[in-house]
Image (cartoon, rainbow, N blue to C red):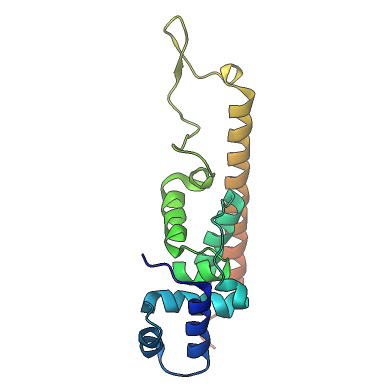
Length: 176
């Protein structure tokens, strides 16, 4: 992957916006990739010059990821479009969040988790060898994490249900 300077990105975007040529012609004239130029143009239109400036990599929290996915689904946006709207520089990251959400629910979106734990996690072994899944034996931190996860999932489902109700109420009835 070739890194382009901020100046080169901005020159290419401004040339395209000025109508100097089509997407391919502008990309060729500035010796940049068409896909890169397309991404820069979307970011420029959404956020201006700051959309083209190189951004330091950031960690996104689960609520932010859920919001991005909700908007993508509700408005029928592509990963590329929603990434430009939310200033996520790698649109493939949005696709990864979507895949994780499909597989693991909201728990898959919690940052810094290598494996996704579920409420039906395998039981732990006691020192005497017997299995136990009692909540009183789990650490307070584990229980708080699970409560947070369940609250996020519940909030997301409530929002989704409200949006479905609102959408179905706004659809006009056929047969006039």
